[in-house]
Image (cartoon, rainbow, N blue to C red; front, side, top):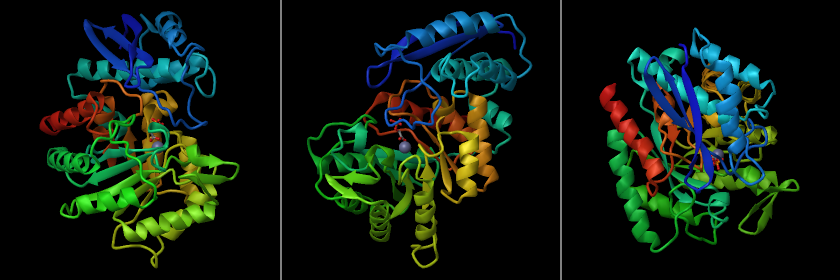
Length: 400
Ligand code: PGA
Ligand code: ZN
C-alpha cells in the first residue's frame, strides 16, 4: 500500500468532547476512521494526547504534519509494517509523543482502506490478519449506568444484559427488556453510555429489578463492570457511602453471584490489585461455590488495558478468565490483535469494547466479529452512536 493522502480533523464524541477523525487515501480509494475516548481510564493505558484546553489540536497536528510527512508516498508491504512504523516513529513506551489517539486513527483508517483495496468486508480482513475464526459476538448491552458514568448514583459503573445467540435474535430481545426497564424506572436520566441512570439505596436493588425483568428470557443473563479503580480510596472501596475492605467486596460479589444470574464481573478490584482478582477467580469458580454449569467470567479492563504483556501476566497468575479489548487503550490495530492472541493463547475469552465517549465509527463491531470475540460491549440503546454498532453487526450477519 502506498498512501497518497492523510488528513485529520476534530469531531465531537457523545460527551461533546473533541476527538479525531482521520481520512486516508490510496489508489483513488478513501477511508475514514474516528477514535473514541474513555472516562474511567486505567493509568496503564496508552496516552490519549489532549491539550490543556481539552482539545485534540496537537494530536491532529501530529497526524497532518509529522505522520503525514513520514508515511505519504512510502510503500508499506503490510498493515503490520505500517503500525510498527508508527510505533517507532512515536518512540515512547505509551505513545505519549504523537498520541495513541492520533496513531490509532491512522491505524484503523489504514485497515479499513486496505479492506476496500482488497474488496473484502472489514471483519473478514481483520480475521485474516489475526488468524482467527469469525463469529457473532454475544451482545453485552449496558442498560443501567452508574459510577463515573452517572455521578455514582449506582455503585457499579455498568449493568449489562448478556444475550446468547446472533445479533438479529438478540437485539429484539434486548429492545423489549430495555423498554420494560424504562417503564419500570419512570422518568430517570440517561448515563454516559446510553443506559438509564436511576438512583437506588442498596447494592442488590438493580440486580433484583433486572433478574425480575429477564426471568422469561432464558437466553439472557446479567454482567457488571464494577470499574473498581474508580471506587478505590486508600486501600478500600467505597460503595453507596460505605467503605469495604477487599475481602468484604469479595463477599459482596459472592453474595450477588449466589442470588442473581450473573454472567461476568469486570474490574472487580482496582487496576493494581491482581491478587484480589485471583482470589475472586478461585472463589467464584471453585466447584463448591459455582452455580450451575457456567463459569463466571472475571474480566480484566483497567487491569490489562489491552496490553499483550499485562494480559500475559494476568493470565499466568490466574487473575481472570476473560479480557476486555479496547483498541484505544493500546493505540494500534496490530497490538489490539496481539492482545486478542495473547488472550486466546491462555485459553480465555476476549470481549471487544467501545468507550464511554463514542463516535459513529463502527470498527469495533467488525473487530469483535472478525476476531471471533465471546462478546461485544457497545453500550445502551439510548444513543445513536451505540445503535450504529448494533446496526453494523446486523449488516455483518448478512455479509457473512
Ligand atoms: P470508559 O468506560 O470508556 O469510560 O473507560 C468503559 C469501561 O470501563 O469498560
Ligand atoms: Zn470497564
